[in-house]
Length: 174
Image 1: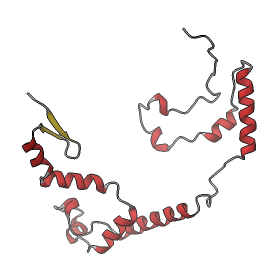
Image 2 (image 1 turned 180 degrees about the vertical axis):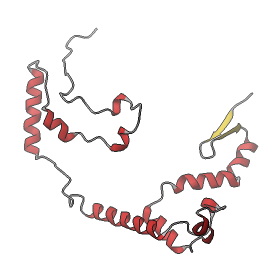
Image 3 (image 1 turned 120 degrees about the horizontal axis):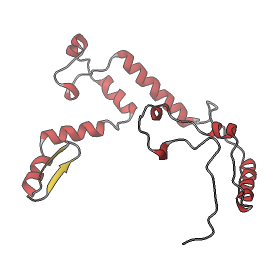
Image 4 (image 1 turned 45 degrees about the horizontal axis):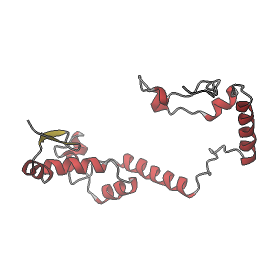
């Protein structure tokens, strides 16, 4: 049967030969799908500038739909959406200028970290199992809300147990 070429942008596969691949990669459908893919990663400021430079789409404003979709040369963004996008851009700029401005960083001092590290190492070398206090564990772990909505979350993305993992030393191999 031969090799098949799969295009991730178009979600299509076809027989892989020079003629078919060249025809597909130069096709309008492929170019549109590729542009749509890369448009997902555009900067918010770029999107806002492009939408402001366009006139509003009358058909979209009247009916809420446009037959041209993403390839329409008019803007499908309302004033409310533009203001929200502008606010997001301002928030991002403030975060870049001063990330500690909102006071969300609860970083501990280096001395405190070193002392905790020494205690942990001492506990490990003495053969005891290290237990983390529940309060400290709850402080450090924040589960993003979008992860909680996933029904079959992989174990690697679950938070650690409240008492911490059991740490045992294995001196013998084999």
